[in-house]
Amino acid sequence: MITCYLAPMEGITTYIYRNAYHRCFGGINRYFTPFIASKKMNSREINEILPEHNEGMTVVPQILTNRAEEFLQIAEQIAAFGYRTVNLNLGCPSGTVTARKRGAGFLGVPEQLDEFLYTIFEKSPLKISIKTRIGISSEEEWDRLLTIYRKYPIEELIIHPRLQQEQYKGTPHKSAYKKAQDVLRIPLCYNGDIHSPDAFAALVSDFPNVSRIMLGRGILKNPYLVHRLRGDMDTGPDKDTIKAFHDELFARYAEAMSGETPVLYKMKDLWTYLSQSFTNPEKYLKKIRKANTFADYKAAVGSLLREQELLEKQIDAT
Image (cartoon, rainbow, N blue to C red; front, side, top):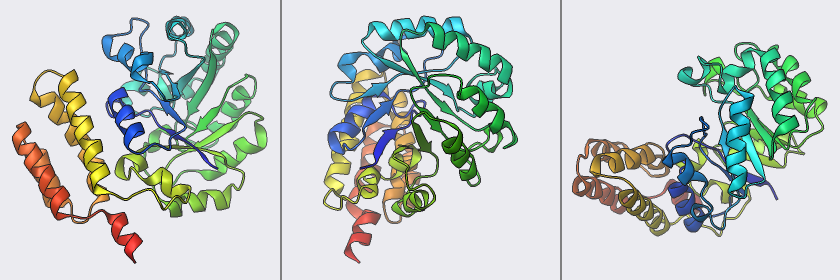
């Protein structure tokens, strides 16, 4: 059976989201937290890794830094919470991150990256996995990065086979993943554009031995995706479960945040993706986005849930 991970998405896959998803849908083998970027962890970052906020789930904290000393200090704090593995973010393509040579931006200075990895693998109290892109602007950069990665006992390499400059556009460079399979002798995980059973089938056709995948936007759009990839047609689709998931998210964010505006911001973010699970969502999504009060928001969501059907429900009926 394929092993499925939930990607870390800043501001979206919070511990509140992970808990609600895990209870309502399940099927994810490992959850990755949004990144921790400073040794002076703030309350939001601490909340993400508190054991009591992650009960019953396998969770891997993620670190974003290009300073070995800072990585090690953060890793020490994470270890104190009982974690055994940490993930290094070399994949974030955001301009505000990469401009500081962090995330995927660190890939543009391979000599510095090599020195950084040497230090953290020598001194880290935790095992280290890495989430990476294949370079900044050219596929040719991947060969140099693979030469670096093969030096170290990486717990797992999660590969999003796009360049930093491509962001999330265009077609992933599957040839880069194939090259990693040929060169590396460490566990690999594929990440990128697995948004449907057909996309997954195409991936398996290209890489019959793929055993680990990371899902991101595909899960946000279709919470049942992981079950579909495994051929579990007995799980959903079910609007009652979608509603229970939504209601738990709403209630937990309302408890954790002060005022209606930040809660509505979180929930509108959710519907940017989740609305795509429904037939004809456009006019409802506009009303959700325009809502400035809890009452208006709940009315807009209620209309969508009552008046539209899940796309997968229609597919199953054909």
